[in-house]
Length: 103
Image (tube, rainbow, N blue to C red; front, side, top):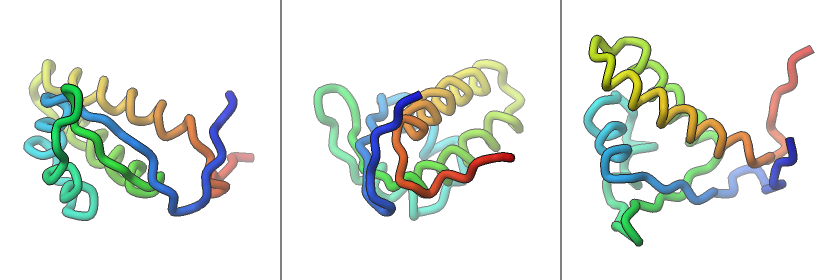
């Protein structure tokens, strides 16, 4: 898999639908370091655009996964899992030189 090289700390564009934004803001316990920019985001072409570092995105993924794993609602769990998969694929499409490799 080819990843786009970026510098550590560079921000990447992440878009959220209305529902995805709602999932993060209302159904996770993500802290202000990842939610503030999403709360302030303006709609652009039907989506909300936010810029995250890969570390921020990784942190957000943890909150989304935790909520999906603890959700009693199958529908909510599926929505969160779908969001997680999309965000993980996006994050893995970049390389800031900080990836840890398993041996």
